[in-house]
Length: 170
Image (cartoon, rainbow, N blue to C red; front, side, top):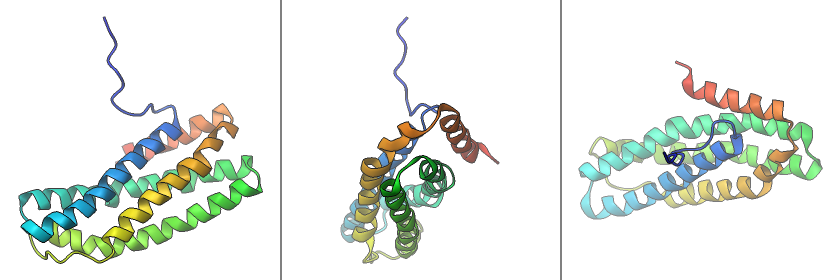
């Protein structure tokens, strides 16, 4: 019997899980831009309301957990194992999380209004929000994630366990 291909990232590889999150970041950030264009033509129709709810759900829940995965587990572990250049990159990307959160908070009210079938005037920050999130994910993948090999197996397992626990706690 053939084995089915995996449907998601392996839970024993934190970088694979984080990259999968980044793919969703890109998908939902781009969806926010497409939604803006859709709403300009069709208003807050059923399709727009559904898309707004999906973007809200992702950035209100999953993106927050993703930032916690990095800030609470991956970044501290790599700070201990890395050199000065890696630590500097981690510090810069960690600081960007707050900026991303602030940008999200400026876009969120518009998405809430669309989800409720209301306001159709898009938040002016939609492009900045989408572009900055995508750039941030690209930087993390280029500058931070390749260094995960510096971590010992026990530390990698602990990071995975924390990531899974964060998503399975009531």
